[in-house]
Length: 284
Image (cartoon, rainbow, N blue to C red):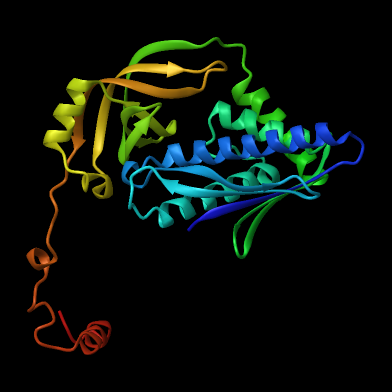
């Protein structure tokens, strides 16, 4: 059973009630971050949610959350581990490289920023054990680096003086996921400009798309053109596309190895012997 063990060591500068409130909000924000990462992967058959298993208000404040599948009996182990790895590497890249992970929405950035700032005022350390040999650790030093990184990213990307807006357009990208976005059926495509984008589907496209396409096309890398309403969040970042129409742009036929292999190519010679003779000029 996959779980998270969150350990929070609060500062002694505040009274006990405030420390507990800070610690609980720290846990809530971290679970929001994990939820955003899980939503980005979009694997409906392996969907899960975090359930509180235990909590101790003794110092250090410790919470154990368990990943529970939304579909009874589903094995979500691999999916949960993928989400954990995505959060761990994403926060590391944010702190060390000042790079915004592609899955990190504005809501996720706000949650991470709150975690960092709380670690500078009231909380000494926050540790999330995601595996036996992998722990996310937030202390004052990397919290300061994280706050500076987010401020820099917001100045360039997120906090431009642009309001929320909607535009009609089309995105072309490789289909890489099928699932839900905000409780609506959705697919995810990877584009050169925007990277991963979720495209919500209206009922008529769910019926059409579901009937004419197989889920294995996700793994075949089918290129799609998705037309609809481009929804831009405040600051100018494209958050999603509400699809009106979908068409296949590139659909290369699968080629079997047996169709292109020439068994007589080496004229019966062993491959090593053939290459040796070829390099020595004995073969035309």
